[in-house]
Image 1 (cartoon, rainbow, N blue to C red):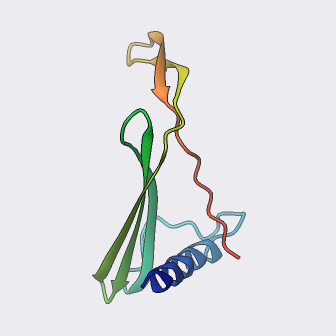
Image 2: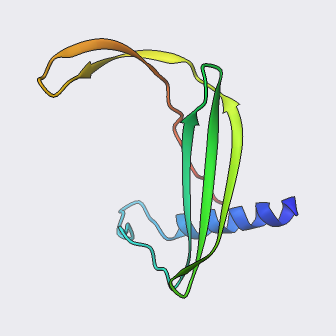
Image 3: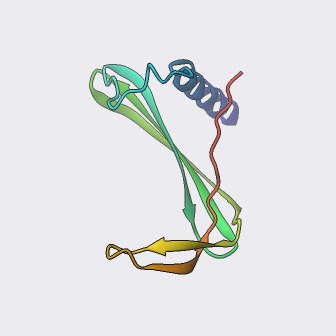
Length: 108
């Protein structure tokens, strides 16, 4: 079962990456819901030691979501960093925020 999930994940990412190029000519604001796979990847901060990587795939068939697959993995938190925050009035203050992961997707 894991092998099937892995193959599905690789196929979904392959379709997503191959549809784009360096010039961003294929960037879209909508999903072709007649037949496509929509993939979302994001990080949630759980606590001071752990973050959670959430990967969601929606399989669209004939304008309906046929299936939604979600994978959750616990990963180590990167700690905090100091930055400057600004409010609506333009006042600035030095604050400590959690570091975020950068997400890169490579398909071969």
